[in-house]
Amino acid sequence: MNGKISKDGTLKIFRGNKFENQCCPWVEKERPCGDWCPLFAEPQTVPVTPVDLEANKPLRPEWVTQLILCKRRIFFKTFTDERESGEVK
Image 1 (cartoon, rainbow, N blue to C red):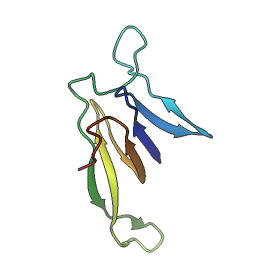
Image 2 (image 1 turned 90 degrees about the vertical axis):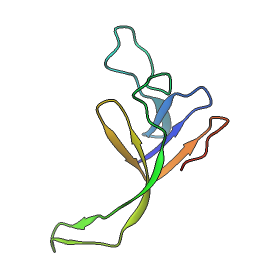
Image 3 (image 1 turned 180 degrees about the vertical axis):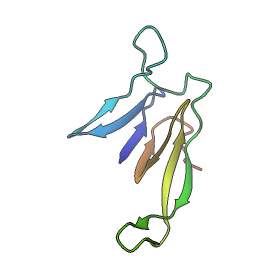
Image 4 (image 1 turned 180 degrees about the horizontal axis):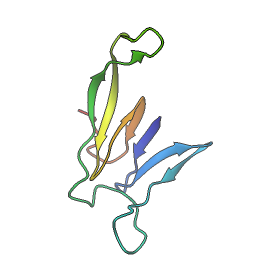
């Protein structure tokens, strides 16, 4: 999955052929998911170990970007942080 945090702090995920704003399902008025929320963590680069389901054994670990949100943890193969301090740690 490909994602990014735009210059204004909005989370966008690549769907179809373009980046789409992701809306927060927990606020009354439609508002995009973004760094305005205190439960929106900073992105981090972490290792994950995929599993070969047919052989039931782990494959070589991969480095991905993890973004923890209020009720979800999302992993991105490609991630860009366009904010001024947009360094993925």
